[in-house]
Image (cartoon, rainbow, N blue to C red; front, side, top):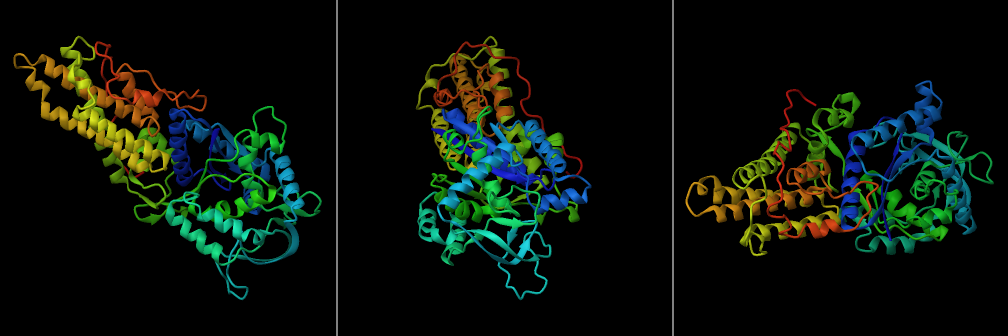
Length: 522
């Protein structure tokens, strides 16, 4: 079975922002973890490129919608390359093959009797591409998310008969684990309890979109179109644009990772559409929270937007990945605080982890012929650091499986903290000066180096760059978690205590993590 994992398809009204990077980095960590475990992973991301908002944004810039989409989607592709995101696919909904997949899917839904014509009246947010629940008589309502005036719409649309799927959706969202975290499920349950209403899947007089076959003048509503991008993305290069072929390449998805603002579309509308078409449902929908900065919502008007490209340039991949994954519980809202950012990076990575490896490797090389010291009792499972490593391994594996990146990161860090504490207690720099202590020093240094090796391996899904530098400094092979990895599960075996070979050469140590010095605000 393929483990299919998706980010949202990001709306290309503007360049990538930190929220998009946050979601994608988290999905990258999950994809790498699953590959290291031995799963065949299909990691999908992409761009949602249709709708009225795109059309208006392009017009305001004096561009055709296609030229606008080409430019912004190129920024996403370039940024993910720079972040070394290990996605296997990047789907664009303007891909010609996507149009054919949408048409084939629509034919199935229409054949199920779930498409009807009706009049759509209501207040519409172009930025959300969504009708709101404001009453018809509302005076100058605005979108609570975008703080922009809503537009009144009154037109004949095609509707999907969502109301027919009330009981099935109720049963689906009641399944443990389908909606995560649990706090998000309550929100969806409350929405569904109010009674599911049929929703519009087309717009009229909107040229920037996919025409609805057999319904002249109608264009597919951007959400109906975009959700199917997850299926189009399954097609391999050279595949004909055939729905059954796409489905055979890795459907259903193991998890859709999304922002909490689009939970309803993924946990209610999308499953109902799939049921109508007779297709399997995704196993999980995970809705994460939003990021603020120093307690304030980020916005252009406030001048406090954090550009992920600038963050990468000034701080590097390891620092940003560590802060976002280690400090913010995935699923909750989080606040980016610059001082805490630099403190955590310096304390955790440069000091605790980097210094532990550097000083231990230096002592081992100095006293044991530039090699891993000989070990006797240190290789046993009853060694205190072996027990700490076993606990860390269990917590990291459980945490990453549940998208609890924070607990996984903290568990890996705790192993390094334990190794530092052990090193300070044993004080090999003092003991080595005493007679008859060489064997004990060798054992102690071996144990700390072995803890460093396992720490590096546990960090591999979260911080692949730092993990690689640590393992190279220990003379170890690097597990492959990239998009082209051939998963074999060897990583799990490598996590067993005692695999470091005594007598193996230790390369010349160098700092594996530079301190983060931020003299000015980001």
